[in-house]
Length: 263
Ligand SMILES: NC(=O)c1ccc[n+]([C@@H]2O[C@H](COP(=O)([O-])OP(=O)(O)OC[C@H]3O[C@@H](n4cnc5c(N)ncnc54)[C@H](O)[C@@H]3O)[C@@H](O)[C@H]2O)c1
Image (cartoon, rainbow, N blue to C red; front, side, top):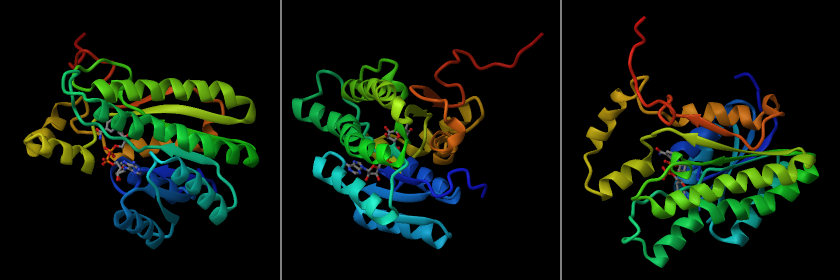
């Protein structure tokens, strides 16, 4: 442990499992006091208990981030327990596939609520607390689908695109308060959510796992790959970084070929 975020108080949403849990775990290992927010009570409590058992500081707050009052209570709980708020990781996301024809109004609203309304609510309550703390860092977990088109991710792509511009707007609006806001794009992570979704679509999960071997560095990304970047963005090492996009995907989004250079 190198204490890169020592004593910073950080909320991580959707941290009962997957990428969010990896982020919460690493932040705690680097000295942060972590508030895990999730709608899964048992898993969320277990995640916080696991971090405490490993010597870190963490509490769990049962939260549905699509509900404004829950997000207000989340920020209040963090400040009540740890005295301030320095960081917010808007990690909650939901990525069900649907084409335009398959997308109903209800589906559209549900996807937009989980992926972007959630961040709006959390920022709305976290920013005043960060202003009181003299600054802060917000990390929005985005997706390559927020930058590039995918015909079977109509609502998800729109939501993650909106999240990107929310990131940039907040970065500009609150920079003078020393509040930074960045957008981080994980690569392909075989998280619990990704596996459950693949299974619900009748896909062969082992075949999907095997596809990691085709990536540039021979594997899928892990929650820890994303967490390293989050630690940097929450830490003071990134004090000049805001409104930026980070890709943690072994070059997947920028390389159109993968071959050995021959002179
Ligand atoms: N897995 C990938 O390959 C991948 C790639 C790019 C981006 N992402 C993004 O990374 C983030 C995390 O993805 P993941 O794969 O770890 O997902 P996951 O489904 O494994 O975990 C998501 C967590 O969010 C929680 N959650 C969902 N809705 C909630 C709500 N309304 N209120 C509170 N908690 C809620 C779930 O209970 C769960 O613990 C998402 O924003 C996703 O869009 C994932």
